[in-house]
Image 1: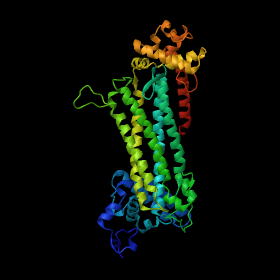
Image 2 (image 1 turned 60 degrees about the vertical axis):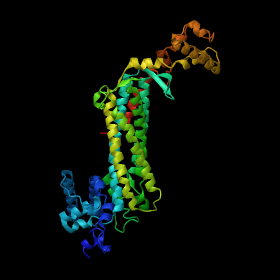
Image 3 (image 1 turned 120 degrees about the horizontal axis):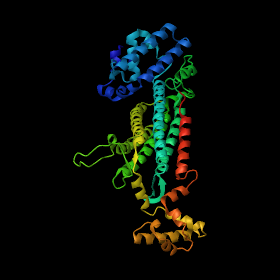
Image 4 (image 1 turned 45 degrees about the vertical axis):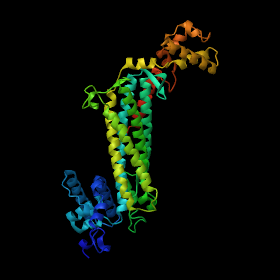
Length: 469
């Protein structure tokens, strides 16, 4: 039977007719999995070299295959490669082109492997490289936040709970909270990378191969930490993709929270911060508008990454061992997530160093909402008043200040002493915004001194985690 009867020279021998045209279009993945071309060729070169080491290929055959694959890589990078849907995927397109270039010896490349372990290897190679890139973008963003936190270590703003003014904090302290979230994200990505960096090649279709392969040498050549020890699991596992998507969804969730705060702070109702015009857009009808499109789109794109995570969890939940064609559906969610997270992190890393805070606006907002009320309660406790009694006393003082239309710090000593004789002239030291933040001078506190110390520690951790160059 000719390859025309079977419809595909790589597997057509069993078939008496070509696939239906709609089936061929429906099952083809080359439109998106061609993105794996570099990693597919890297894996194939390592496989060919191993086959020669164990005597399955001659050195001449190995050299022809490697040279052919390197030439194909150049073709692809130059945009000269003709991708064919009828060859289904990136693997078969490259293998068919290899045979066209070097003849029948190209058909020997697939000895001892399957597309099942081949695609799993390609995905791990690509994801490992992408994680390294994302860690670099996270590091850039974290460095920017640390820099601005140090710059704004003394700038006082309101801290919120339930979006109500709670206690004064410093802008630097708030930005280091963002940095802390992203530091955890970097840790999760680095940990995920360890489980990505395991070689499945050699599992073949599902049960291993009868050829005398040397998997450990392939793992070493490709930079893997080890080999997958169960062939069934090696070809069917997509935990590493799901784990990455989970980490990516958390990154986007954190960026979305940052975005929400920036959007609020950029509003004239807050006026805490400004962004350079290059990160904003205007309105087609309202000439005064400056819209925070970058934060809004980052907030919106979080939904698609969360959706991709749910997609992969659902994809895998009903699959029996081992490989199933369902797994073709893992790539588009993964690729889109990689692009989305990389773009969002990159934009934020570029933008954050240019955040401009309005210290006066932040201070005015901190003076609204009686942000130092807790400080007054703590003051009373230090003067012998039980905390629950102090809480009630301060609540009455706040009610009086509301009626008087002023802040607690603007009440006279005589007014304050109407609520408790434990209040003395030194009370105003704790009712000021500066006194409030300075009093929280401990690890994790918002005092400017602690913000600078925390920023220094964060920078040291960031530098310690940086890969050696």
